Length: 164
Image 1: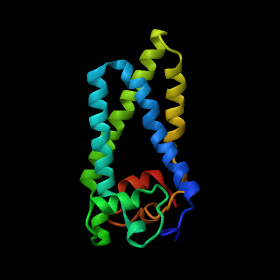
Image 2 (image 1 turned 120 degrees about the vertical axis):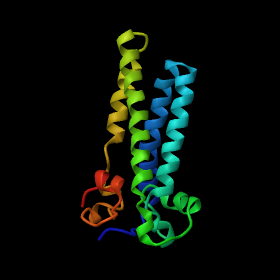
Image 3 (image 1 turned 180 degrees about the vertical axis):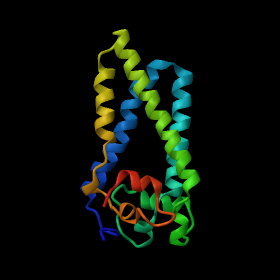
């Protein structure tokens, strides 16, 4: 089992660069769609990340290990320490997945719209960049969630992102 690994800082920084790179690229695209769309995008994305941080497995932080995404520490600050069965709140995680899907759809819509208008070539590049960054990097992840695929209450996000 590959859980509770102490990931080197280089992998943590790389993973953070990938996942925050998605949002930084999206800001350049969404800001061209108007102020209210941009504001709504920021609110939806913030809500999605807050829901994700409060429902993900935070074993790494509780066991004194360095999480591959560095999210274990953030999750333990937002939640009290509880039983392992409490890590997988499927309804909030389902809502987080829907909110993240909505924010990605807005990003893709914005990049296609701006590219078709011919106003700016870079949205197409950013759109491809977003898809590349969104691909999971299984060898750089904890893989604890993917190993529990058949268990009741297993993390739905981890099952989709990380396979054993």
